[in-house]
Image (tube, rainbow, N blue to C red):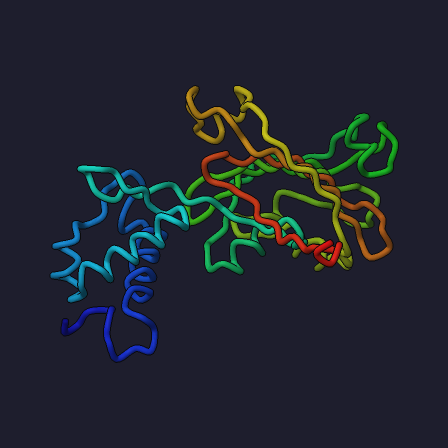
Length: 251
């Protein structure tokens, strides 16, 4: 159809072109979460493609977690899940940008505090030592998906202040600008029930109370722990992926 973003002139298959258009509209909020996608008849009229092409594109969208087909209703738009490979060392912002998403933050607080036993153990400092405590809500394409609590050791040779962090500031980029060469991280992941604090900040209702909880210790190139974070993600908007290699040679 003339003017359609799906065209036979492209080298990409028609179903994949349609999949990409629909996916982009879901990410951009053109098709809002909880809404029903246009009917097959409407898509035929708009895009000029066959029902087989439409059904293949919808099947791929459902497999990738963007929609859910409801009998008698149509295709329901689902909340997107932020996917992150387990073996990749990157920041929240870096992960999002690599997928073409838009990360941002709401800074709740940033202050010097005593480390305490748990944080001190992770950063290999004394419980009476001070750390910078940075607490942020993390957003993906304008939607709140996580609460991050980061503790940066205070003996790195510079101050960390509210003025250093805007809605688009990456903590890792900030540390690197200060001369910290980040090398690796240890991470643990588990499922937890959402506390009242998390339900309030992440807008989690009583029926959907699970969160993905992640602790991470980030080291510099000399294996000195420089930051410890406690991160809680909405369970319906976050998932991990892992690539597993057979080291036994098939035996």
